[in-house]
Image 1 (tube, rainbow, N blue to C red):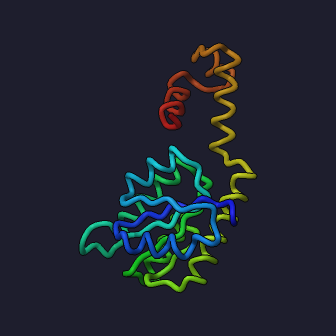
Image 2: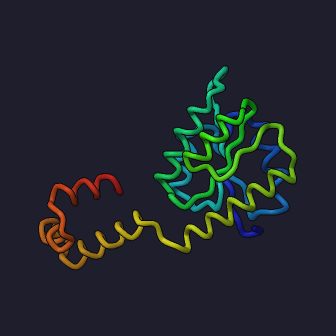
Length: 177
């Protein structure tokens, strides 16, 4: 895990600092983001090995909706990325919901450093495993890119070679950027 780069996403600077200090001896580095939008942008710009993600970003919010929405954005930017949820307001139902939607672990604040380190270590291992075995989306993106290259960017010919309509290919291109 010593080569791992971690992104810590929380609106509370004390939480970000505490997590970074706990992880510092065990990882290559920790970057910080204060909002889900900033986190998604950072994940698009840099390759992280795991993310610590707060579940609530608005004062008084306790339902975890912001964190769950952020998870979808992070997975869109990097489907293999391991995500560990953090929250001060959590119950079993929120933890179950977070895991069902693709979270790798769930920790309550304040955490024990040993638990935090173990959760991040596991998330990094999952990220590595997912990156070694390509996802269906990655295979599809690669196949589309190869078809477009083979047909010199001609959408109609590339779509036909893939067994798709032009519209279906355009939809996939728009979805995948």
